[in-house]
Length: 479
Image (cartoon, rainbow, N blue to C red; front, side):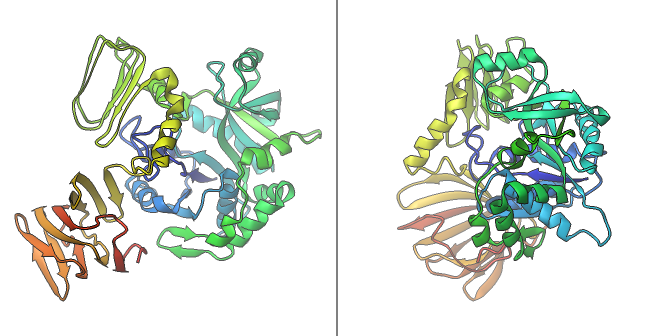
C-alpha cells in the first residue's frame, strides 16, 4: 500500500495565517508537527512504503524540507497547474506503475489530503485496513466520516448493505445538502460525510478513468510520457497537463462507478469515527482545539490576554493580543495583517481574500516572512526608496548568482559567517561586519558555516521589487 498525499491548496480559508505561497498544510495548527507532517506520521505502522506527494511546483521545497524533517523519504510530483484530484491521482498511479518491478502486482494507493486532522490514529488505521481486501480484489474504497451534526459543508455518502470484510456498499455520493436535507441524512443513520480519502489499486484507477473520462486519462498519460526528474522532484510536461480538464475524483469516477447496476458493489465505504476535521475554517479549528473554562482557544507564539471573553478563538503570531467583552469571535494577528470576525461568519473569509487580490495587494499571497529553499527573509521595514530585510541562510546553503538593475544592497552580518561574491572578489564577512553591493554588480551569498547565518539587508534604489533579480546560476533551478 503506497500512500499518496495530495498537498495542493490555495490558502484562502484560514487567511491571514494561510496564504497562497504558504497554505495551511504547511502550518502547525494542532500540535508540534505541521499538517503535512501529521498526515505522514499517521501512516507509521500502516504502510512501510515511501509516500508519493503531489503538490504545486511553487511549494516543492516546503514539501521536501517538511517531509525530510519528518523522517520520510518522498517522491514529489510537481503539478505545473492545479487540475483537481482526478488528474492528480492519475499522475501518482502512472508514476508508481512506471517504477513497478517486473512481475509485481499493481500496488494499492491510499489517497489522503495533507490538511486533515485525525485525532484517533488507531481508528484511522483500522478503517484503512478494513478496506484493503476489497480494494485488492478490484473494488474502489473510501473512508466515510460518521457525522456528528447535520453539517451542510460536506458532501455525503449513502451506504447500503454490509459486504465481505465489514465494509458497506456505496449506493451514491450526494452533493452538499441544505439544512433540512442534512438533518434527514443524520437521522437516517446510513449517511457519512465524504472525507476525500480513498483507496484503490493503481491499475484499476486508470482503467476506470479511461472508461469514464478518457480525456483526463489521455492528458495525464501524455503529461507523464515526458517527465524530468530533479532531485526528489518529478516534473510532468507542463503543456500537456495544462490541457487536462479540471475534475475531482468524486465526479470523474466515484459517482458514476457507484451508480452502475450490478450484483456486486463497485465502491465500498469503511465508517470512520476518529475525531476527523478538514479544518476548513477558523471555527472548525476552534472546534478541535483545547479550550479554557470560558470556551476560548488560543494559538501561536505571541501572548494573549482574554478578559470577559467567551467562546472565541485568538491567534497571536508574535505581539500581545488582548480582548475585552467579546463572545464568539475570531482574532488572527500576523505581522502584516489582522483578521477580526464573528465565529459564525468565518466561512466568508474568502470574500476578503478576493478583495485583497482584486486590489493588487500582496497579502493574499505572501507573508511578511517569506520562505526560500536556502532559508527565509522578513521584510521588517520599507519606504519609497528603501527596504530593510532580516535574512536567514541555512548552513551550507547558497543564494543564486544574481544582479539587480535598480537597487544597491548593504549587508550587515548579525551572527554566523557570510561568504560573499562581489563582482570579481570573494571574501568572508563575519559578525558585526558589513559589505556593500553596488547597482548592477553580479553577486552571490553563501553560508559556509555549520550554524545559521543571520544578516540585515538594506536595499536602496528606484525600484525594490522581487522581480528585479537577474539570475545567472542557481542550485535550485530558478536561473
